[in-house]
Amino acid sequence: TKGGYEHFMYKEINEQPGALRRTTQGRLDTRTGGAKLDEFPPGTFADVQQVHLIAMGTSHHAGMYAASLLNARGIPAYAFMSGEYSVVKPPVTPSTLVVAVSQSGETADTLDAVRRARSAGARTLAVTNVVGSSITRECDDELLLRAGPEIGVAATKTFSSQVTALALLAERITEDYTGMKSTDSRELMNALARLPGDVQEILDTSTAREVAIEYEGSDAYFFIGRGPAHPVALEGALKFKEISYEHAEGFAASELKHGPLALVTPITPVFAIFTGHEDEATLSNVKEVQARGAPVIAVTSDESSEIAEFADHVLSIPETHPEIAGILANVQLQLVAYHAANLLERPIDKPRNLAKCVTVE
Ligand code: F6R
Image (cartoon, rainbow, N blue to C red; front, side):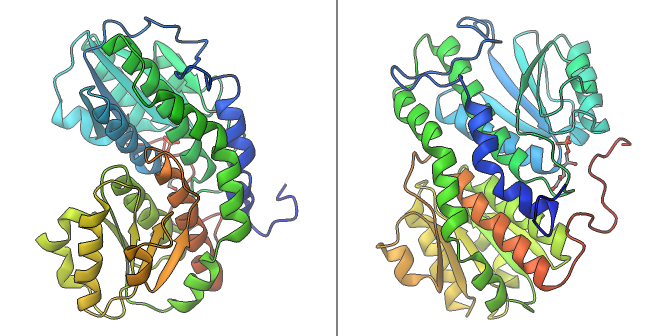
């Protein structure tokens, strides 16, 4: 049931602190750093030379996020849409770990990509929310999200849990690949332990509804970010378009000048996501869109900075480890999408033309 909420999506957004607590339960070593994954003891990934993350939609954004976490730790990692994986055929060897990310565990494109990876000799690992789903049978190993059932077609709490579970997996892979814990592992594990509380703080204080009201009726909504904030920009736009039916697009902030800037006008609000990854450069992108009259909504933990001074609105996130700040920023963008769609009286839990699970290619 919706437990008093008007929509499953809103219920599931609000369930995130509990979902994240379950995702991390017993899996964090906050004292010495490192992930404690019973399924994957130290040394499990000693033979892994590169990681491919394959997924679709929101899960692909989580895969992109994880690739950036792994790259930052020196691990060769690449994210692919599973629907492209069998077409592009990136080289796979027995030392490739293929991580298939799927909430449902039933997405046809992702299952197909897993089969291709297996037949090429790769080791396959499913990150999924559904116990006993097809993907757990097709892959060598599984890492469960434990986020609880997700009913709303728009994935929300499972994205947060996917990124969190993948951050833990990334720690284990890093330790096995480099022979030591990443230097900031303890800080990261402690930040993950605080994550449920940080998300709760956003749920309690967000001004996302005011932002949705202020910019209702705009021509389009753009989202920009760098590093791990890039997949968060894509995810912010995906959520916004799928439930509001308004035109929304996400870009790497660095891409703006190479075309998308032509679309920017005083009636295209731009959401700029700051997670401590070359924020100065993103701030100069903000100045560029403002020079075209576009309103800017900054998602940042740094309210006293130049960022806040330039932005028309700030959606504030608690200060945390930069590698997981994107999870918090995404919660603010989930709320913006939800309130925008609700103002337009859209059927939020069952958007037109979409299914919770895409079982045909
Ligand atoms: C968007 C959404 C979809 C799914 C995609 C993959 O809100 O839910 O983009 O993320 O269809 O689904 P799973 O994760 O079940 O493989």
